[in-house]
Structures are given as structure tokens and as C-alpha cells.
Amino acid sequence: MRRARIQRSVEQESDDFVSIETKSEYEAQVRVTCPDKTGLGSDITRTIFDFGLVTTKGDFATDGKWAFVLVTVMKQSAILNKAGNAGPGVNWMLLKQRLENLCPSKQSISTLSTLNLTSMTGAGGDSTNNLRDYEKQQKKMYILQVEVSDRVGLLHDVTQELWASELTVHRAHISTSPADTAVDLFYVTDEKNELPSETRVAEISTAVQRVAGRRVGGGTGSRGQGQGTGTPVGTAGGTQTCHVVITPAPSFVTQSPSASLARLFETNNSIGRVETASATQYNSATVSVDNLMSDKHTVFQIRTRDRKGLLYDVLRASKDLEVKVNYAKVVLKVDTAPKPKNDARPRPPEFGDDESPNSNPHKAQTHLCEIDLFVGRCPNAREREYLCQRYKENVERPVSVQIMTGGLDETTTELRVIAPLDISGFTRPRVLLDVTEALRQLKVMVFKADILIDDNKPGDHGSGDGNHAHGSATGDASSDGYFGGGRGKLTRRQEVHRFLLTDAHGQPIASVRDRKVVVNRVLGVLLQ
Image (cartoon, rainbow, N blue to C red; front, top):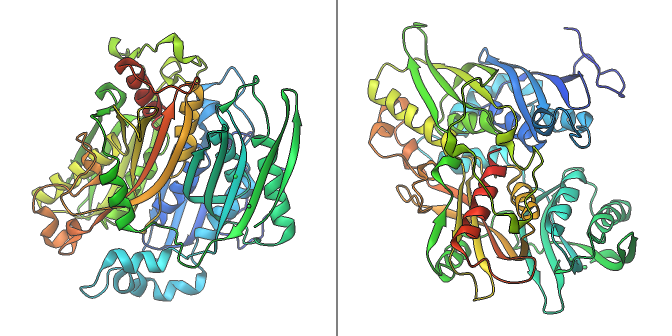
């Protein structure tokens, strides 16, 4: 097989599992040929999603031992903003490295059946824990503290720079002092595995100081010590000191907070009435099933408007349901249907609305995504109906966005974003980045923020807005043979992002209309 070259890079070795052929700085064809493993497609699409890319065309196949993936990916901002600036180009070399890290070694081929059927599901054991132990290799965690004068968009800028510095944020605690100083604590792992070397610490500190110390229009408001620096950062808007400190996290700190903390957080802060995004913010999807196309496969056909993370949500659902996908095909088509009148979604001018195509994707050309999944033969009609229901839920409402009429006190408004973890314990990519981008567009300040993991009991949806994608589906189809006798009984784990908000003047978001603008915009960016 001829291996492509990555732009501005050396030729790949002939035995590489991943090759990327770039068409531009925003578009490329990605080929992955490696030993197969359970959930590989979900992991690959999660990484593509993490880079802000959408799949415009793709094929996934497996022969039981090897996986073959060929997808054309494009930066979403380039699709939405073809006539303007789509931002910095994609780091294709980093994407290649991340995808290669997902590929099992060739030596694992002989043990794949054992790994897939025994180690991950266990002989009557807990499949969630076994799969998580196999796939999720715990890395050393560090606490990165940033301390600097607050401003609109600060949390978003820091979060984006941490991602660019190849750090993964597992938890965050954001607070603002009475002196308008922001103190941000990020619990991170280093994807380059170079911390705590002095060179790596200096590299991260310099990058964070460059963006955190920047003044934007003279705005004020609040935002993080160990090994690190505190350097005055000079900009066109003035000079301010930004302290960045990186220390190893204590041994009792894990990548997932304890469930008891999450429940305590949920109980103590349920103040006021919960308001949710408008139903029109969610895309509708049709999921049909074809049992006649093949005598060996059942075909699930999914049709919906394209958005970021769509393919990941489909394959994540397959992974969670332990449905083996033998072949998948993805096609993106231009949506020629007229848009409904209620899709205009007017927004109040007092929020300083950003009218770029990226902030209002409904002004840009939309696309329809067609996904066909060829899975193992499913003769039982009730099981097929159950799978259609679960796919539809995960496609239409992959996240839940809530805003409270009250916050921690009378000076703030509480926003919650709830996203499910997959069966391996991996969180949804880009949630913190997208939420803070939406708040930046609306010039909303983050007074305090937390990221926690909440364990949902089976049948406990817990999101309060009819978003059933986060809980177990009703019915007893999951107890039939197709699901291995109990997959529907697994505890559903969720990542809860909580933000205490004020407007640019430090006041709570008091009006119903303004709160609806915030929750709709946040969901709009998450599902853009």
C-alpha cells in the first residue's frame, strides 16, 4: 500500500498504521490500518472530534482482526466560513501521533478474541470496569494554577492554549477573588509525557502567560503555583502579571472525582428552577433498520443534519451497547430543503452578539449526514427497535444544557452542561472549550466553575429535561441474548460542568430572555 506524506513532514515509514494526505491546511484524507479492538472506531472519531474536525466522507471496516478506516476530514470553521478566515490550520502531525497511540500493536492480533470477549466483558463480571482498566491507561496528574486579572474570554483562551500545549484537562476549579483576580486550577495530564521537566514546565508556562496576560479592550473581571513562573506580560492594552505554577497532584487525586462529591454538589446547589434550551435547538434524526439488504447483517440507517461530534456519538453508542460494527459508511450532502421560520433564533443586542458564521451556524450552508451501520444480524424486532431508540437519543440529544434561576448566591446565575462518559470512562471532547467560547461571544463572565463526574443509577436520567441519552432506555430488550444479558443495567456515568455566571458588569443574568439566550447559544456551539 502506498503511504501518503503529511505536508511539511518527512515521508512515513512503510509500517505506519496511520497516514494522512493533506488537501489543504484545513482538509485531509486520513487512513488507519491497524489491528482491531473493541471501540476502536469510537476512539478514532473521538480524536478527530477533539481536533475540531468533521467527517465529510468515510468508510470503516473490519475483518475481525484488522480494522480499515478511510475518512476525509475538514476543520468545521472552514466549512462554515468558506469566504473568510477559518483560523489557524490543523496540526496534522499531532493528529497522526494521537491516532497512532490508539492503534494496538501487531503482537496483539493473536489475543484479540480473548481481549474483546473475556477481559473486557468478563465471565459474568463487570464489563465497565474491565474495559476501562484495559483501555484507560492512567497517567500522572498535575495541578496547573493560573492567577491573573479576570476578563471576558479568559477561561476560553487558557483552555484553548492548554489543548494546544498537548495537555488534557480532567478537572477544573475556577474562582474569582474579591480583588477581581481569577484563580484557575486545572487538573491535567501531559500527552507528551515530559512533565515535570523544567523545559516542559517553562514551555507550558510561557504559552499560558502569553494568552492569559493579554488585556482585551481594557476589560476587567477574574482568573492560576509548584514549579512555575510569574511574569509581567506586556500587551497593547497594558501590562499585568500572570502567575503560572505546575505541581504534581497528590496521590489521592484521581482523574475522576468521587461520586460522593458529585452527589453532594448536586444536592447542595439545586437552587431555583431549572430552565433548558429550546427544543428547536436540537436536530431531529431519523433512524431506520433494514434486515433484507444482507443475510448476515442488520443495517441501521441514520439521517440527520451534520454537526460536530455526530459520528463520534453514533460509534460511542455502539461501543456502549457493545454492538459490533462490521462496516460503516458516511456521506455528507448539501441540505437543499428550506429552513423553517422558527430556525432564525433571534438574540438580544445587549449581549454583544457576534454575527460571524462560526457563532451563528444557521446563516451558513448546512449539510445532511447519512450514516449506514452494518452490524451483526439482529433477527429480533424488539431488539432492533431498542437499538433504533438508543441511536436516535444519542444523535439528537448527546448533551444536556441547563440554567438555574438562582446560583450560589444572589450575585450569580448557574449554568450546567451534562455529557455522558463512554463505557471506557472517556469524557466528551471540547465541552469546556465550546462552552467558554459561547460565553465569550455573549460577553458573559465566569465567576466560578467546576468539572465533576456523576454516577447515574440505572433508570435515573437525572438531567431533568427529557434528555434520555444519559440514562438507561426503558423496556427489557437489553436483557435478551443480543445484548449479552445485562448491558442495559450498567451504571451511566456523566461529566457535569458547572459555571456560575455574571454579565460583563458583575450582575446576575436576571431576565428569562437573557437566560434563554445563554442556554441556547451554549447548546448551539456545542452542537454546531
